[in-house]
Length: 86
Image (cartoon, rainbow, N blue to C red; front, side, top):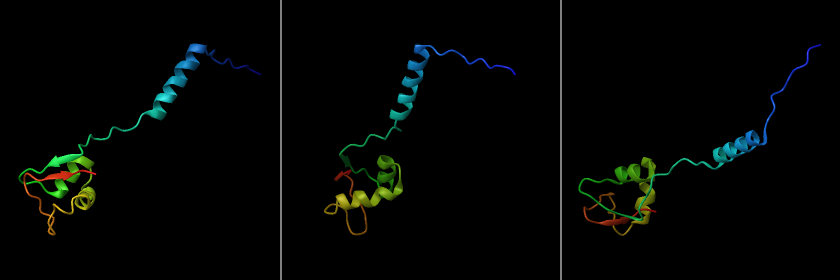
């Protein structure tokens, strides 16, 4: 019957592994930074703004809902308007 030899772990090895494990658990994917407001530029659309600041086209509705007074019924934006980005 053969005996197996296990590697010896030092206190430094254990501390380093715990530190690496903790870093993995706390690391979150970076979110794009988003200002509280945005000045509409010529040619902007709700879809383009949603993609730029939220990373997904479906966020257009959140933007529209937060800016009901500024955005027309047909979802057109006017250059120069300052909209909220919720």
